[in-house]
Length: 269
Image (cartoon, rainbow, N blue to C red; front, side):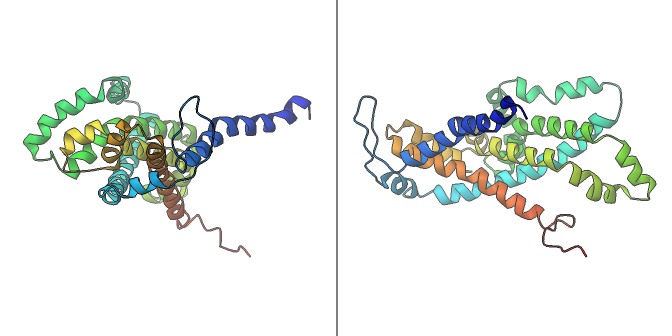
């Protein structure tokens, strides 16, 4: 093993510490200290005023649970649409396939605000404005393209040979999906779950337009705090905001452990 090869793990941990661990530790520390500006003497005066202000917000808990279940539904719908569309784009050839593939990317190319304003008129006519159903539907617009792209690449990497083998052995379409496709697509599904939830959680403008103030998510509670000059409050709220994707991801991993082919406690004789 060469010296350059030995140094790569150390370089990785150094870069991880600088780019990830240090900002997180600094944010945690900032949420428990009084604000200090540039040129001020560095001193750690501990305080919980930021967290006290955070939990004094009456809508915090309700907005948190609203964001969680809206994000969960958005994730499920993204996985369902992404699996079907991704498989079709990966394995099937049909006229206009390139055009369909391009159309799926349009919500990313066009300004989301313009799309929301146009969709808002249609939702008013359909009676979906100011409802959680309307908010979920508009959250699908910025998330579906990523889900389709990720799961399509997952199916391309999977290939058709192993699926054909399962069919030749007598597996039905549903059994083949449960026992072959779903387990082998797990990395792509994990990426889809995490990305779709984060995008849904961070939507403020389109939630305010479609929800009309009736559906209050965590982003709608968080963004007004950005006008505050108190960095301690902002750090505390940022920590609370960042915990939700982590907790949701851990919950998904816990549910995955209960799948039939995920039993680490099973002892093989």
